[in-house]
Length: 467
Image (cartoon, rainbow, N blue to C red):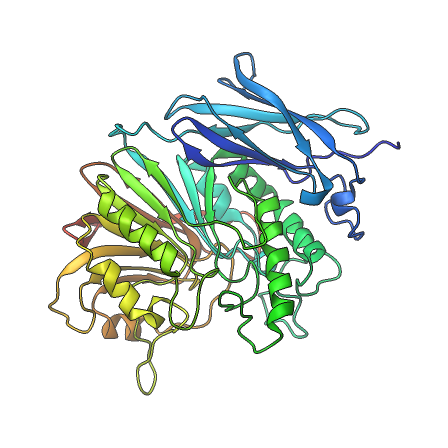
């Protein structure tokens, strides 16, 4: 067999940290944007043995776990290794290697960190990001986020965008090219190449290489505004179900997830505990959605039981969509039915469940917001039952927002900023602090990062940092 090129063009990643282990990931792709659907990533139809190692030091002189994994064409030669038997709240390094017929055989080394033990009261530093449309700009925000060395990153949806290149792109928005041809994703091959295009970005690779991620999806991982098994545009549901299955498979193949997709879908809602300080509840707001229900009965039951059973100081809902009410200007004032405003009864059940330390982290709207969750959003005097932090996009452009009008119509919303960026949170058993970071531009590399705003949480209210 002829020699193949460097197989680790898409980098390495870790995710789903637990107190005793993590998932480590890579995908063999010597030709990451290859156009032959029968040879994803330029790989032959063979099973490749991939060696992996986990060490306590970056030089790999103290190896604590090692083994082999099978990279198969069925899963685009991706590798997901469940590493167990590690110590809690500990930094580790990992790497992969392969033999012939590859010309170069060693991956770059990644760094990861396990979650703290169940009894731990150690502080947790985490970042969250969302909406990273490749064509719209550079991932400089991710580079700055990585420099802060959080314990874990939550990616809250729209990891990719399924769109093709518009016939007439808006000026200044389409600043990077997708894989050729630049068409909307519908097939497994197209979704694979879209993820591969994103994963060749050096800043995204660096962010995955440096810190474990926990991801949830929104709609653009499949199709804009889809609901459950329906495409949302009146097109053939059977064809859409095939498209959704392809999209879910490609999502799994390119991210460090613990479970594989099946014919019925991909299990995405899950619990990620961080000691006694924070319980992170990652939600799936798309796969089970109908016009009447966002989460589906099984997921809602799981969520309410987890919230009731949690003894952690903070219960964090990690999900993509704006949770608090957001009246938008216009005659008459209206709300987005694609967000939690479209499901007010479900939201009220969560907001009024008597949860101490409820925090929602969100994305989707390409702007940064912060607000308080109310028992009854129609009654300004009702009790505050939690808080919400909404992150801006990494790159995805947004439409013009009349922020002053929105803030005036929604007194429970306390902050807005329209720049791209990320959010960094420091959480302890005694308190919560959130810092918003932003970059001034994304059309060129090298944008500096700046502090935009900061808030502490006190009795379900937001207290801004003093100047």
